[in-house]
Amino acid sequence: MKALVLKEPSRFVYEDVPLPEFGDTDVLIEVRACGICGSDVHGMDGSTGRRQPPVIMGHEASGVIAEVGSQITGWKQGDRVTFDSTIYCGECWYCRRGEINLCDRRRVLGVSCDDYRQHGAFADYVAVPARILYALPDEVSYEEASMVEPLSVAVHAVEMTLVRLNDVAVVMGAGMIGLLIVQVLRIAGCGVIVTVDIDSRKLELAQKLGADAGLNPSECNVPGEVKKLTNDRGADLAFEVVGITETVKAAAESLRKGGCLTLVGNLSPSIDFPLQWVVTRQIQVKGSCASCGEYPVCLDLIAQRRVNVQPLISAIAPLEEGSLWFERLYKKEQDLMKVILKPQEKA
Ligand SMILES: [Zn+2]
Ligand SMILES: [Zn+2]
Image (tube, rainbow, N blue to C red; front, side):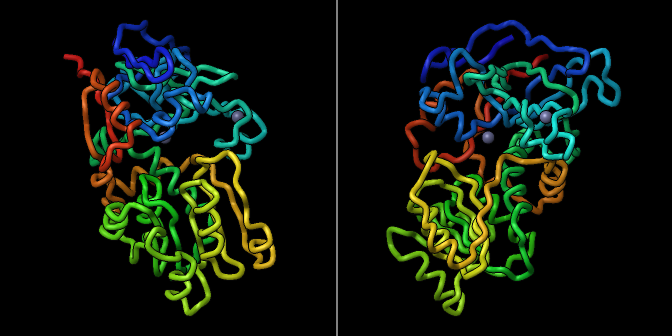
């Protein structure tokens, strides 16, 4: 089969590789679409240590079942599916509590780090355990299904947060996840949703997708503006989707006393944290990691057109052009949000 292989830092080759091996409880999937994630672009130069070459990246994918392992019941050749980006073991202490995103033996597809190498879906085929599969509703295209993974991250972050009817929420960062959080917060019943980003075009898009206001920190004082919108009180909720000192600080300082700060972004591994502000105002701080079984909800939200992923898809391109698209994303070309790669369809 063909695959887009990261051969050495920042160098991809589209080449022939062996079909992935699959066991009795696995399925072999013919990949139809796979999105390039920010973490793939961030990791391709070797800086994160989580894309150690050689590796086939890709964890935001969908496709058709080509073959099933001998122990599999309930799935068959030809089924349209997507799958969790994380292979959880299903047996450890966390898995048995249902906290599959915290699995002790978790492996993320398309990641290769010191502990493991798990080839992903920038290939004609990928093999995954059947327990991580989800069937696609007829209304959801393969391209839309490859957006379920980022959407599940947004849904999980909102579900981690106690959202009350008519809450005021600040979303720090209007990239892919931020724009999805905005849409999910609307469904969850928020009253006013404020987005914050240094890119005004992203703020405009956020407002098209349901945000009420957009603040650009290079033009205004964000906590001050949020106060103006909330009778001088501050927002009930803040979602931080960037992960640097400035944005975490602005998110915390935009909250009212007793508000909730949900941390999703982690661009910097550690930051300067406004400890006293958080403690003395009794702010709740939560980290949100990946997702935990939210895929069916996400597929329904897309099928019912309650979340609109289309405006976030910038390009759909053949897998063999992958190298070029990774380079464009790495250079942070303007106006590029999600790029989806498609392997050549078999006859
Ligand atoms: Zn991702
Ligand atoms: Zn586990």
